[in-house]
Image 1 (cartoon, rainbow, N blue to C red):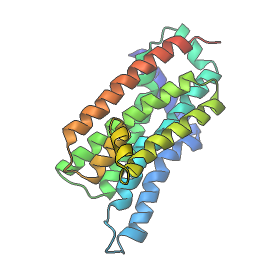
Image 2: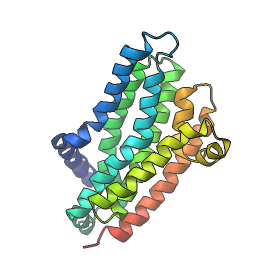
Image 3: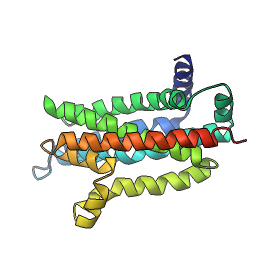
Image 4: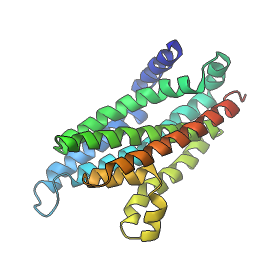
Length: 231
């Protein structure tokens, strides 16, 4: 537990020193708020929470992947990860330490989205549940890419296309059944489904997101053990 706490505190300090990372947790709720107030609310033809759900789905399913990738890739490039592995830090400790802080920050953003969307009762429960579990999947995927990548530049070149495919597939699936069948197995599609329709099959969505998290966690552990000690 001490290792997890140490890494958690380290990441908290690093994030507040890095405006590029910090701004990602501010810009999406800010855009949702501005667009809601200036566009959605004045226009009776636009649902009041349209921009809230749109920005929330993009934030949880796409934006955090390159953020987490960059954080991990920086540790790899600076040899910090190698030192942590040599010090006996286990894969789950490293992931809980860094990912835990990012998840906490992401959860704060999710609450902000929920308040802006004026969700209540079971709606806010479903919204926060799918947002937090979806954010967890994004974090683990980003961490895995960051460890596999050789440096921050290659990490960005890998994570951005993956994030874009996962992020835009749910939008395209609204117009293409083939894409819908393909994207249904991914956590990003389930985030999009639930935040836009609280009457959708919530249990099924959570099971799919949970399955994604399980698979990604295994991949992260394998990548950590194989790449963590590289010089």
